[in-house]
Amino acid sequence: DYVRYMTSNSVLIGAEVDKIISILMVTTVLAVALVRAQRLLNRAVVDSAAAHDLSRFVAPEVADRITTADEEVQAGDGEGKQASVLFTNIEGFSTTSERLEPQALIGALNEYFSALCEVIDRHGGVITQFEGDAMLISFNTVKPDPNHAANAVGTAIGIQGVVAGRTFGGAVMKTRCGLSTGELVFGAVGAKDRLLFTVHGDEVNVAARLEQLNKTSGTY
Image 1: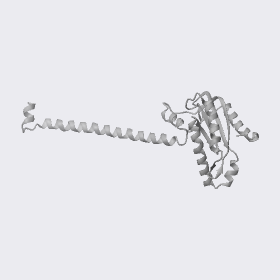
Image 2: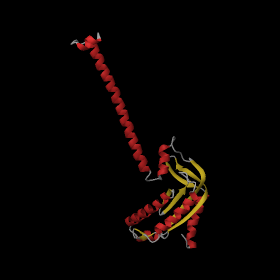
Image 3: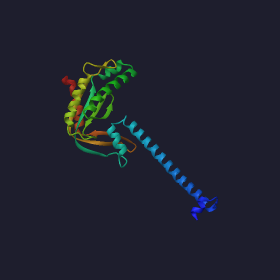
Image 4: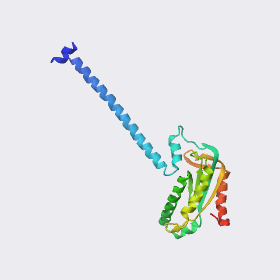
Protein backbone atom coordinates (compact mmCIF):
# COMPACT_ATOMS: atom_id res chain seq x y z
CA ASP A 1 0.00 0.00 0.00
CA TYR A 2 1.75 3.17 -1.19
CA VAL A 3 -0.05 5.51 1.24
CA ARG A 4 0.68 3.28 4.22
CA TYR A 5 4.30 2.98 3.14
CA MET A 6 4.72 6.76 2.86
CA THR A 7 3.07 7.41 6.25
CA SER A 8 4.79 4.66 8.22
CA ASN A 9 8.30 4.03 9.42
CA SER A 10 8.69 1.06 7.11
CA VAL A 11 11.58 0.96 4.65
CA LEU A 12 11.37 -0.98 1.40
CA ILE A 13 14.84 -1.70 0.17
CA GLY A 14 13.72 -2.15 -3.44
CA ALA A 15 11.91 1.20 -3.48
CA GLU A 16 14.91 3.01 -2.02
CA VAL A 17 17.20 1.38 -4.58
CA ASP A 18 14.83 2.48 -7.36
CA LYS A 19 14.85 5.99 -5.91
CA ILE A 20 18.65 6.12 -5.81
CA ILE A 21 18.92 4.75 -9.35
CA SER A 22 16.41 7.33 -10.61
CA ILE A 23 18.27 10.18 -8.93
CA LEU A 24 21.60 8.97 -10.34
CA MET A 25 20.15 8.64 -13.84
CA VAL A 26 18.59 12.13 -13.78
CA THR A 27 21.82 13.58 -12.37
CA THR A 28 23.84 11.87 -15.11
CA VAL A 29 21.54 13.14 -17.86
CA LEU A 30 21.67 16.70 -16.46
CA ALA A 31 25.47 16.53 -16.11
CA VAL A 32 25.89 15.39 -19.72
CA ALA A 33 23.49 18.10 -20.91
CA LEU A 34 25.37 20.77 -18.97
CA VAL A 35 28.74 19.62 -20.34
CA ARG A 36 27.42 19.67 -23.91
CA ALA A 37 25.84 23.10 -23.36
CA GLN A 38 29.10 24.44 -21.97
CA ARG A 39 31.03 23.09 -24.96
CA LEU A 40 28.55 24.64 -27.38
CA LEU A 41 28.76 27.96 -25.53
CA ASN A 42 32.55 27.89 -25.54
CA ARG A 43 32.55 27.04 -29.26
CA ALA A 44 30.14 29.90 -29.98
CA VAL A 45 32.32 32.34 -28.04
CA VAL A 46 35.47 31.14 -29.84
CA ASP A 47 33.76 31.37 -33.24
CA SER A 48 32.48 34.86 -32.44
CA ALA A 49 35.95 35.98 -31.34
CA ALA A 50 37.50 34.44 -34.46
CA ALA A 51 34.98 36.21 -36.68
CA HIS A 52 35.69 39.49 -34.91
CA ASP A 53 39.45 39.06 -35.32
CA LEU A 54 38.99 38.05 -38.96
CA SER A 55 36.97 41.21 -39.65
CA ARG A 56 40.01 43.27 -38.60
CA PHE A 57 42.08 41.77 -41.41
CA VAL A 58 39.43 41.62 -44.14
CA ALA A 59 36.26 43.60 -44.75
CA PRO A 60 33.55 42.73 -42.17
CA GLU A 61 31.25 41.74 -45.03
CA VAL A 62 33.88 39.29 -46.33
CA ALA A 63 34.45 37.91 -42.82
CA ASP A 64 30.70 37.38 -42.44
CA ARG A 65 30.52 35.57 -45.77
CA ILE A 66 33.40 33.27 -44.79
CA THR A 67 32.09 32.42 -41.31
CA THR A 68 28.47 31.87 -42.38
CA ALA A 69 29.12 29.94 -45.61
CA ASP A 70 27.34 26.60 -45.81
CA GLU A 71 30.39 25.06 -47.46
CA GLU A 72 34.12 25.69 -47.20
CA VAL A 73 35.18 28.56 -49.43
CA GLN A 74 37.24 27.31 -52.37
CA ALA A 75 39.58 29.07 -54.80
CA GLY A 76 37.56 30.22 -57.77
CA ASP A 77 34.34 30.81 -55.83
CA GLY A 78 32.99 34.13 -57.04
CA GLU A 79 30.28 36.01 -58.85
CA GLY A 80 30.14 38.61 -61.58
CA LYS A 81 28.00 41.73 -61.48
CA GLN A 82 27.86 45.39 -62.45
CA ALA A 83 29.91 47.20 -59.83
CA SER A 84 32.29 50.09 -59.28
CA VAL A 85 35.89 50.11 -58.18
CA LEU A 86 38.02 52.92 -56.76
CA PHE A 87 41.82 52.89 -56.70
CA THR A 88 43.71 55.32 -54.43
CA ASN A 89 47.38 56.19 -54.07
CA ILE A 90 49.30 58.79 -52.07
CA GLU A 91 51.21 61.37 -54.10
CA GLY A 92 54.95 61.35 -53.37
CA PHE A 93 54.68 58.58 -50.80
CA SER A 94 58.19 57.26 -51.55
CA THR A 95 59.68 60.61 -50.58
CA THR A 96 57.56 60.73 -47.43
CA SER A 97 58.57 57.20 -46.40
CA GLU A 98 62.27 58.09 -46.79
CA ARG A 99 61.88 61.17 -44.60
CA LEU A 100 60.01 59.53 -41.70
CA GLU A 101 61.28 56.96 -39.23
CA PRO A 102 59.62 53.53 -39.69
CA GLN A 103 57.55 53.80 -36.51
CA ALA A 104 56.44 57.33 -37.36
CA LEU A 105 55.56 56.20 -40.89
CA ILE A 106 53.35 53.38 -39.59
CA GLY A 107 51.63 55.80 -37.23
CA ALA A 108 51.01 58.28 -40.03
CA LEU A 109 49.58 55.57 -42.30
CA ASN A 110 47.30 54.27 -39.56
CA GLU A 111 45.97 57.79 -38.97
CA TYR A 112 45.52 58.26 -42.72
CA PHE A 113 43.73 54.95 -43.30
CA SER A 114 41.47 55.50 -40.27
CA ALA A 115 40.35 58.86 -41.64
CA LEU A 116 39.70 57.44 -45.11
CA CYS A 117 37.85 54.42 -43.75
CA GLU A 118 35.24 56.71 -42.23
CA VAL A 119 34.55 58.19 -45.67
CA ILE A 120 34.49 54.75 -47.32
CA ASP A 121 32.11 53.29 -44.74
CA ARG A 122 29.82 56.29 -45.04
CA HIS A 123 29.40 55.65 -48.78
CA GLY A 124 29.03 51.88 -48.48
CA GLY A 125 32.40 50.96 -49.95
CA VAL A 126 34.35 47.81 -49.10
CA ILE A 127 38.14 47.93 -48.83
CA THR A 128 39.07 44.92 -50.92
CA GLN A 129 42.82 45.28 -50.67
CA PHE A 130 45.62 47.31 -49.05
CA GLU A 131 48.87 47.47 -50.96
CA GLY A 132 51.45 49.71 -49.31
CA ASP A 133 49.90 53.17 -49.35
CA ALA A 134 47.34 52.18 -52.01
CA MET A 135 43.80 50.94 -51.54
CA LEU A 136 41.41 49.04 -53.78
CA ILE A 137 37.80 49.83 -52.84
CA SER A 138 34.77 48.14 -54.38
CA PHE A 139 31.08 48.99 -54.41
CA ASN A 140 28.18 46.57 -54.98
CA THR A 141 30.38 43.51 -54.64
CA VAL A 142 30.05 41.94 -51.20
CA LYS A 143 26.97 43.94 -50.24
CA PRO A 144 24.25 45.20 -52.60
CA ASP A 145 24.44 48.87 -53.61
CA PRO A 146 22.19 50.04 -56.46
CA ASN A 147 23.87 53.49 -56.35
CA HIS A 148 27.39 52.09 -56.48
CA ALA A 149 28.66 54.46 -59.19
CA ALA A 150 27.45 57.58 -57.37
CA ASN A 151 28.82 56.29 -54.07
CA ALA A 152 32.21 55.62 -55.65
CA VAL A 153 32.33 59.22 -56.90
CA GLY A 154 31.15 60.46 -53.50
CA THR A 155 33.93 58.51 -51.82
CA ALA A 156 36.59 59.98 -54.12
CA ILE A 157 35.31 63.51 -53.45
CA GLY A 158 35.09 62.81 -49.73
CA ILE A 159 38.69 61.59 -49.67
CA GLN A 160 39.82 64.86 -51.24
CA GLY A 161 37.98 66.75 -48.52
CA VAL A 162 39.67 64.72 -45.78
CA VAL A 163 43.26 65.06 -47.02
CA ALA A 164 43.02 68.73 -48.06
CA GLY A 165 44.78 71.05 -45.64
CA ARG A 166 45.53 68.29 -43.15
CA THR A 167 48.61 66.34 -42.15
CA PHE A 168 48.91 62.80 -40.87
CA GLY A 169 51.71 62.31 -38.40
CA GLY A 170 53.15 65.57 -39.69
CA ALA A 171 53.08 64.40 -43.31
CA VAL A 172 50.95 65.74 -46.16
CA MET A 173 49.23 62.88 -47.95
CA LYS A 174 47.47 64.17 -51.03
CA THR A 175 45.62 61.27 -52.58
CA ARG A 176 45.07 60.45 -56.23
CA CYS A 177 41.91 58.52 -57.15
CA GLY A 178 40.88 56.56 -60.23
CA LEU A 179 37.50 54.92 -60.56
CA SER A 180 35.55 52.90 -63.07
CA THR A 181 32.21 51.11 -63.36
CA GLY A 182 31.42 47.93 -65.27
CA GLU A 183 31.35 44.16 -65.06
CA LEU A 184 33.45 42.90 -62.14
CA VAL A 185 34.10 39.47 -60.68
CA PHE A 186 34.40 39.26 -56.91
CA GLY A 187 35.54 36.12 -55.14
CA ALA A 188 38.28 33.97 -53.70
CA VAL A 189 41.51 33.41 -55.61
CA GLY A 190 44.74 31.71 -54.64
CA ALA A 191 45.86 28.26 -53.56
CA LYS A 192 44.04 25.63 -51.52
CA ASP A 193 45.43 26.83 -48.18
CA ARG A 194 45.99 30.49 -49.04
CA LEU A 195 43.07 32.53 -50.38
CA LEU A 196 42.43 36.20 -51.04
CA PHE A 197 39.05 37.82 -51.59
CA THR A 198 39.46 40.43 -54.31
CA VAL A 199 37.93 41.85 -57.48
CA HIS A 200 38.97 41.17 -61.06
CA GLY A 201 38.08 42.62 -64.42
CA ASP A 202 39.05 45.25 -66.95
CA GLU A 203 37.49 47.96 -64.78
CA VAL A 204 40.10 47.36 -62.08
CA ASN A 205 42.86 47.96 -64.64
CA VAL A 206 41.07 51.05 -65.94
CA ALA A 207 40.75 52.49 -62.43
CA ALA A 208 44.46 51.88 -61.79
CA ARG A 209 45.43 53.56 -65.08
CA LEU A 210 43.18 56.54 -64.38
CA GLU A 211 44.82 56.94 -60.98
CA GLN A 212 48.22 57.02 -62.69
CA LEU A 213 46.90 59.49 -65.28
CA ASN A 214 46.48 62.07 -62.49
CA LYS A 215 50.26 62.44 -62.49
CA THR A 216 50.43 63.86 -65.99
CA SER A 217 47.12 65.71 -65.72
CA GLY A 218 47.95 67.48 -62.48
CA THR A 219 44.70 66.26 -60.95
CA TYR A 220 43.60 64.10 -58.07
